[in-house]
Length: 427
Image 1 (cartoon, rainbow, N blue to C red):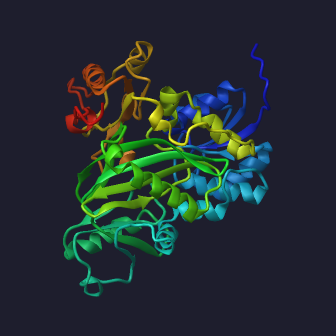
Image 2 (image 1 turned 90 degrees about the vertical axis):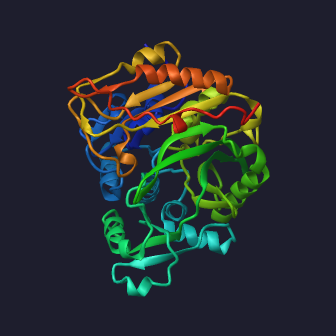
């Protein structure tokens, strides 16, 4: 029989996808009672929950009803954007604790509000503006192509399209508007760049940087920015360290973030580093998995503490200075087809070749052409002492992971440029 020497909570967890599994498993292991909210019939995290309610993790009223029904102590979510806002709103409605208020959650998840704060606080970002359904091509002749259009409030690259010619704009707008109920969408000047992500934590009034990664993306134009890997540490970290730290601290101050996780996307290009987007959540590239493996720091416990109002204490302002290890987070995709069989991920875990991994599909599922991050086929997290060892492990893993169709073809898309690391970017 398990004995727990800490408070046991009844918790609503928003989202049961693979990005939430580490949180759900942690809460389950600690003995908390978990009510999972996820609109899917059988999400990966369901096995760690005591109750599963099939409603959307965006549905604020639905979340409130479930929390009332089960007399929940709190609402929590980790690696997913919009449910942070839903969780903050539902918590305020119910007078339950949460780590940020709804106005801050809105500012960090709604791109129009986010951009206005960038402008107000002189945070460097790309040129941008807003489009309504009433705008015609004639109205927009002044826009210098290419541009990117995106909804204010979607996630997973849904509705994010690059527009190279003005004549393509109406179709791009139509698709982008299909992913939002808002009356406007955002346009941004296209900025050729490398993307980096900064993961951190705000505790005791201080900003602690935990990870800076290269966010490796690919485009299936007009759909762009679809993430296929995260490389830790970023190849840009050493040369841009002071700018990255200052921008991170400036963003925390500009938004008034007092505690909890931060996740900022920045663009490295010819005009320097520009801020793309902000979030107050654990990253969706399994940061809670690899950061725990790197430093022994349990982000899921830090998150629960912040939700419940228990102070967190972190000992380093910059955790990246404490390790020389390297990590590949491979977010793999697959060619269209029907899945006949999948390799056994548990063998790789048991052998310690990967520290985490899972498929997003099962046998019999149909894989469709890639349009955004929702088409991701699965993930692998690989840690090593140096890049040479990391590449050897990656090679070994990719030789053993397969998604086969009925003809025996491996549908897994292997992207060596994304999945392997260049030598010599760090000691």
